[in-house]
Length: 165
Image 1: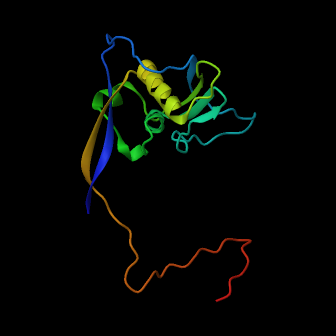
Image 2 (image 1 turned 90 degrees about the vertical axis):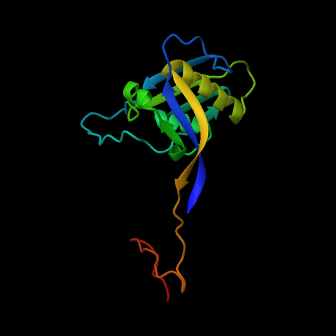
């Protein structure tokens, strides 16, 4: 099966580009994420955390993830819908995890759409993000139950009560 899938292409822009316009955060902090560990505890580094989410508390907004996931959440897409140009790949290490803390302007609580627009502006300013939207035809596979029904049985975990029949 072949299906048309919306794709967002990200690319690096020339440094001489003029300022980015659009809704912006009043103040924002973007830093590499380093987990805080207790002394004597070693961590197994996971460079690609769970999908990034925009978390809001009043006018404060936070997000954590690699650049591809931050772009996806900022545009309301799934990570497979985001592709990168070679220039972007050469310029930014997309396995690096970033933590973003920001404050929306004013006292009104921003909507999700407003937060996404401000995130898009932030990514364009801090990471020289430039986007191109297009639909791309890609192969898609459907997982369907075969005639006669599924032959899979549910897993039994320790502590689960025994099943009858």
